[in-house]
Amino acid sequence: MKTNLKLSKVATIDIGSNAIRLLISNVFEIKGVKYHTKNSLYRVQLRLGDDSFKYGTLSEKNYGKLKSTLKSFKLILEINEIKKYLAYATSAMRNLNNGEKILMSLEKETGIKVEIISGKKESEIVAKNDISSHIGKTKNYCFIDVGGGSTEVIIYKKNTFYKSKSFKIGGVRLINGLVTDSTWNDFKIWIETNATELKKLKIIGIGGNINKIYKISGVKYTKPLTLKKFKNTLDKLEKMSYQKKLIKLKLNPDRIDVIHPAGRIYYFLLKTLSIKEIYVPKIGLADGMVSEII
Image 1 (cartoon, one colour):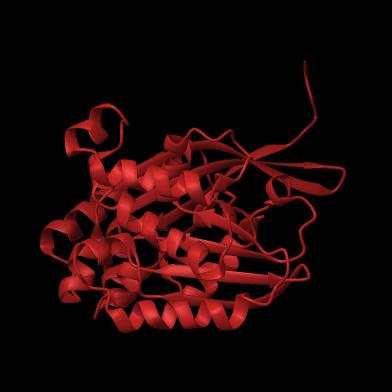
Image 2: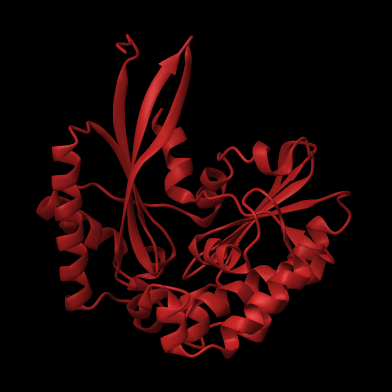
């Protein structure tokens, strides 16, 4: 069946602390309203955070891998005839001593322009995702997005942006022993100060690790993950061997060591606020970036 609908594609690149993602989305317009749907997703594990958080620099090996990844993404953009794209780098690149200089060199070598964004902007982009099918008409809600190097918390009060903050707590930082007790305490105090009094607050978990935890828990999609089931799943992950996580749960090798530490961060927020469930839509930074483009 033929249609006059004009379809195009856009691309968003998210350079994180654990992995790099390229999301290609379909964009179309109906009666003056623009829509977008996922076309394809490419994920490359580099774990730039290991270099960044330990040493503040990028090793020659990881620089080469990052350059090759961006070159391959450039080819994928050309094959898909994509004219518009956004490429953002987050915590690992923010933490480098010479992050901007590295990205300028990479742009010359790959043709991909990458911008380092602040934790605040990262929070704002994540919050652009539509989560109405999960939380309904709830007016008070809180996003928590746990990455390899940072955790972004964004609070909405009466459907209006209220507060946001980025914390240097993430899966890669935790496995490298780079999160201090004072950082955890700052995280706890900020949550209690800004979210405790909000009535009927709903929590929305964002990120690859919470999505995997949600899937492993067996909860039906759009239904919330209860605190009890969350804890049971974390306990299960903690006890399972590397081999079982790899074979039985079919986890990517780069996620096996970070999934439990990352899960602890989400669980910590829920326990701090005495909230019994978390909603887990399949969205992230790259999805929110599409809204910026269109």
